[in-house]
Length: 423
Image 1 (cartoon, helix red, strand yellow):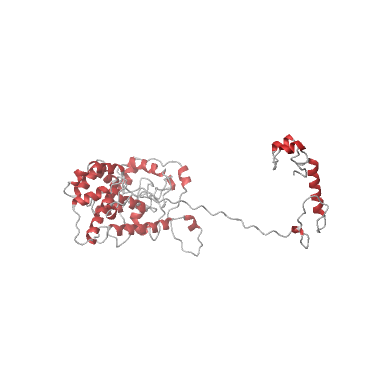
Image 2 (tube, rainbow, N blue to C red):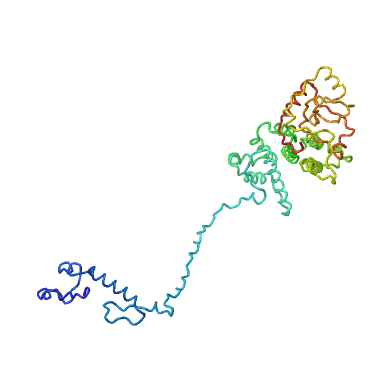
């Protein structure tokens, strides 16, 4: 039966006689007997029209004359003839996929990691010295924590060589392992290690860095850290404690040097003053000096009732005005001889005995606006409580041996950058 059409009504008697008792309706039979498989367009439109008309009726029983299946009106049986709010569907949030964890098969820890740390580089004098010191501490700790345990030189060499994980060092150890294990002492192995991986003349290079290290316009702690790094890379007793303290003091900032000299109880040669104590003292004085010299603009706006933090007896000259002014006239031979005999300044042309003379160095010269002489690069307006006391009674130290050279250097240094925290 296809849309009310009986297949047996369309077949002839002869056909029925030749067919089986259970004929099958297939596409082939429908094609051969011209049977309608799909409903016509008119019948489909009729069904759609009847369906829409049925939905517009009042909610009651379905018509008996309808040729379609009864319409289920249960969803419309609401007292206010409105669709009830549908039950919200709970969205199933897909859970995050569980990551597949694979067991990490790491290499078993080396025996050396239990006693001494491994060395991955860099191959510098500082890094090697620090690591070798850790090796010695590891050996001592192992013997102290294990009763009657003594590490032989061969065991120490083996542990040290196994801890060399830097590629070049690992290859060096693998190539000469048997030779190094036959050495008499662990120090002999360390000597071969330094001989192979430290550059020739490394000690002279570190000494050069040490003696050329100065603070300049840097922070004091940066200068102290660099000096300590150079000192630590050298063998023990290469630089004595006194030489280290002298370098730390005399190569610091000139204003910091004056601040230390102003302390009555300060003695650089005191046996109770260690390098660490001197570094801490100079760091504290540097912080005080920076705070005392910091932003002058806030000090100029201070009310009249407050006590001024700085009293300057020398008129300040703006940097732009000093640089735009004409250069200082050259000194004559007579003026140069007079200033040299009186221990005067070749920059400001003043000498002891002048009304506006203040003791100073070439770099801390206050300048002289009358002759367009700019202040020195490290000049700070003198403070009555700090710098004035530091300068009182001090001998004048003139670092210039050549008058002509000092005059040229003074002009060149005036053109340096103004990033000094104390200027």
